[in-house]
Amino acid sequence: MEIGDDHRFWVKPWIRTVRSGDLDAVGRVVAEGRARGGVPATAAVVSCYEAGREGFWIHRALTRGGIQNRVVDSSSIEVKRRARRTKTDRIDAGKLLMLLVRVCSGERGAWQEVRVPTEAAEAARHVSRERTALRKEQTRLGNQIGSWLATCGCGVSRRARRTAAWWTTARDWQGERLPAPVQARIARAEARLAVLTAQITTLEEAQRAATQTAAPESALGRLVQLKGVATTSATILLDEGLVWRAFRNRREVGGLQGFAPAIYSSGTTDRDQGISRAGNARLQAVSIQLAWNWVRWQPLSAITQWYRAHFGERRRARRIGIVAVPRKLLIALWRYATTGVVPAGALLHPVRVA
Image 1 (spheres, helix red, strand yellow):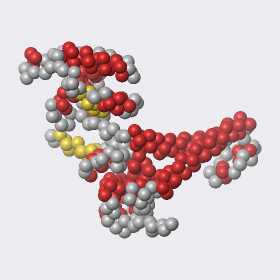
Image 2 (cartoon, one colour):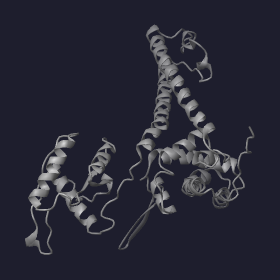
Image 3 (cartoon, helix red, strand yellow):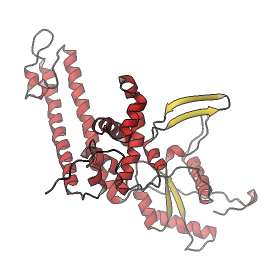
Image 4 (tube, one colour):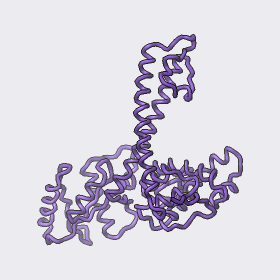
C-alpha cells in the first residue's frame, strides 16, 4: 500500500481473504502484494490481529515467517458510539489497517497491544487455570446439591455431607427418606465431586512439588517465603505474567490488575464512577484474597499499617478499603520477585535447612 502526503496519492486497500490456518496462502498473498506494490522481496511486512480464541500461535507463525506482527487488545480499538453501527469483516479489516498505519507512523495511544508470552509460559499457566475452573465446578455442584435438598425441606450441613452415602439417611421435612430419584441424582453429583476433588488434589500436589524444587532466588521461591502468600496464589501471579510480561514500571503492573479510579470529568460534569474493573480477572480475584491474607499475617508491614490507619477497625470500612490494598501489594510483590527487595516491614518464613 502506497501512502502520500496528499489525499490524491492514497491507494485503495487491497483486501484478500485467507482461510484460517493456511500459512502457505498467507505467504502467497504477501508475495503478490509486494509485486503489486512494486517493492523488493526483502521489504518489511507489518501485520496485526485482534487477540482472541486463536491465542498466539498465529503471531508466532507470522513472526517466524519474517513478518512484524502486533497482537491488539480488541477492547482498545475505537468505534463509533452510535447505538446501531454498521459492522462487517471488511469494515473491521479496513479499520485495523488504518490504525496500523497510524501506529507505524509513530502515533502513540492509537490502541493497546497484548504482551505475547513465551510458549513455555503459555503452557505452564494451564495448571493454575485448570485448578481455578475445577474449583468453580466443585462449588457449583456443592451449591446445586444444597438446592435439591432445600426443595425437600432437608437441611444437611457440608460437614455431614462428607460421610459416605449420606443422602441415603437424610430426611425430608416430614421425617421421611428422600425420594429415590433425588437420591440417585445426588449420588451421581457426588461421584462427579469425587472426580473433581481427585483432580484438584493432583494439580495442587504438582504446584507444591514445583515450589519445593524451585531455587530460593527464583521468583516462585521468593514469593512463597513471604508469610501470607500461599503456593497457589504465588503460582497464579507468576502464570498470569507478574514476571514474564517484563514490566518497566509500577504503572504497568497496576494497569494489568486494574482497580484504578474511573473518573468522569467533562465540562461542568464531574463525578467519580468508582473503580474500573478493566484488568486481568484471574489476577483480580487472587489479589483480593492475597490482600486479606496480607493484612492478617503481615501486621507490621507498611501496607498493613497504611490500611489500618486509613480504614480503622470498623468492619464496613475495612471491607471497602481492602480494594485499595491489592494494587499496592502487587507492585511490592513484583519488585520482590524481580529484584529481591523485600516489602517494607514484611516477615519471611524461616529458611529450612536440609
